[in-house]
Image: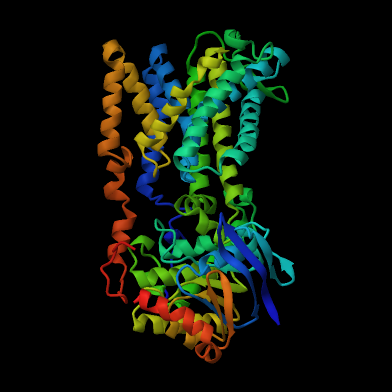
Length: 256
Length: 358
């Protein structure tokens, strides 16, 4: 069944239509990739789904509820959590502190309770610390959990970004170009990591340039070009789709 | 590779409270609460300066909290003014006890700050700084043109001194009388210590970490479900509360308040105390305020050069000590980043040099 539905989603920036009447559904437990040449509207689509941008028209429905009019933190609370392109983390904290802060959604204590350190607040913190350590271990960051985040190497930062999102207990995890800038070996590891996350019961929606990784990892693929959906299907179907090949031939050269 | 860790490992809550540091703090409190008042008991002037510095520090603590969420706040003068007028009006016209005026002034300032904050806290960086600066001026003008309610430029004078604080007929604090500066000194010192404890608790609790996460990246904070709008209003309201209480204290201390009591200069000063002392340290605004207030008094003799010397001092501090004066003393003892980074085993999967720009 579909967990998340994008319905006739459109976003204009002045005269430019960045996303144009896009329709697709994400099924529970699958890995769905959104691909497309540069400027196809992938990032805008991402921001629309997580409510960082408001659609010009159309809507996003999650578990039967329209989420595209909500605030980003409310969407996160519902279980739709995104990561960011590149390495957006809290730089001036340790890896562990990053992930503990990211457990905020699970807070049971009130602000006053936290201020006065009531038992619920202390229980929260102990639980967060344990869970954060577990998430870091799971994503291969256990050894660097006490290192300052800004000093971590590139590959670790990306994993830390995913750890932050995982701490918010997503039902749908949106990954913004999780494999960009990685060498094949790092990509292999990241692909396994994303599959592992899916195996934990998290539905994954990812935006990506790296075609080979996408073909390997995705259950289904949605292809955008100039803001419009031009194809949708399994990797095998997409590989043979004429519209996709046409859209990609030019831009692949460009990218290289 | 999991190790069990002591609770202090996260670096909050028990933030580096070693026995040595506790002893240092106790000594500092002893000097502040006992040695200084005994030493200067005869000198109303010096006690006055210290009282002044204490409450200016107290008010600046609020600005420091707004720095914690990544906002440059130049509106603290406005809330000191609101608090001061609240206390002045309540005590002169309605006979409300000073001891009730003090928290009420803070609450009124916090309420006004919350309402204004909801609107202006969307702004960031220099835009927020500019609008808060204008807010100081707007509030001053509002009190200037407040008609009979605020008594315009003539202000409110003859504000009563703090009366006795009695609970069930038991006198907790006797009424402040005459020109004795000691009660004011002790009240100011108590307020400052309470304010410091509150801010210290705030920043070391998980709330402080939520604030820090917002300062470092608001979008990321929102993406993990932090209600950014709510927490920045909490921080700003807290800041305004301190401003209001401080303003109420000064109203009773000077026994008068005018629209010109707090101008843009004062708002800027509150911010500069934080900068000078150091934004990474709860003690920052205290060090900054005491240093500037006292040096201001010392430079009094050089009347005509005062502003010049003051300015040069300021600029050199910003140039050579961008992290504040306290960054000097704590560089050796605290520096958690450098040490931990070096200590952590960091296998490098990407082959890039560590700390390379990303």
